[in-house]
Length: 263
Image (cartoon, rainbow, N blue to C red; front, side, top):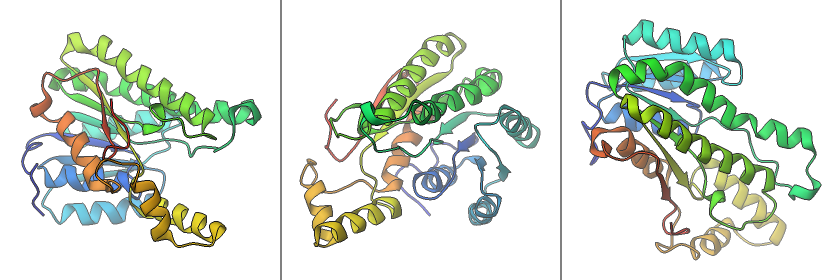
């Protein structure tokens, strides 16, 4: 598989945290295509091994580590395994999150809000543990965020709080890790045209008595490009930020929304 970013991660080791379906898979696939060796982590051991097998066909070294990213012990074991296998770490792509509750903030239980706010804590724990290796390689961190930090979509109050916290975390880590040569950036995707969004549009279409295509066109009409970005397009933006092409870029958030948001 070749694409415009082929080779931009050659010789590097990339850790994809949250290598599940959709964007997580795309981050891993595009990293391999860009020349990186990989460590992939998610909770599903079976799905992880299937993905690892596919990635190894590209000739890259791939370590699959089933990990509960909310469990500090599991995260510690992940980082230790990564360094034991590869001896270095050049980039961390953090894609783990809790699904949004989709409730009005005034009606959301505090326990639900607390559970969603676990997401930035997961990112902090992972980056803390990876920081010495990243400093040694003068590496990079890319945190996957969401366009929810820009828009006014109702019913995502706790999720918006979480993503705003994640953005603040990335900016703070950029300040603290920058003197060690480590860059920290974020990517804020819009609707990602993959299975989850397709399923959501199909459900909405049934409720409205219309078609999924009509829902797609309605949402896409709010973007400059009149379409929704694919997982590989989001992943390519993350790879750019992880690569030496972005060697002077840190503390930033790159929106990849096909023009649904401007920032």
